[in-house]
Length: 210
Image (tube, rainbow, N blue to C red; front, side, top):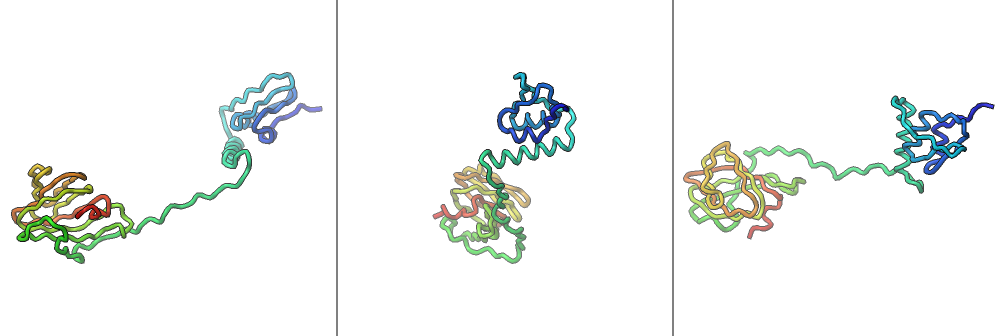
């Protein structure tokens, strides 16, 4: 009668726990590898455990064993079914804004003096599915204070934008980028005219403006 051969199948049936085999049984390398993956102790009838050492070279059978072990772990000891991954919310579409299609309107909040013309228009909002907002702003000669309840980046398109107060009297010209953190007290101003893009976070930047 031939010697007993222990394959990966026998090991899988014994998982998790111990597998008792004949003293002269042949344990295949794949069975050893499977035992190591599934935590099965292979013991000969003499009580000597067969070390679940992994072979140095793993073939296709080894790969399939690992896949089966992964599926087993996902199913759990009590069984069950695999659940297909659920997709997240749909990604909002890409939006391109034509600057010529959006005309800034008079600034609706207090701050600018009567002689100073300030106008804004939002072109990206939370309605677009964006966590940020963006728009255009124009100001004429003069200055006015503003307290930021949000973070904002400004990109100057034309003229000079003067940032006083926490801005330290800095001057931004066409092509320059400014960052104003939440909580800053800024004085917006220009000696002539300025037009810039603002990008705010969060999108509902005006929720804290009174």
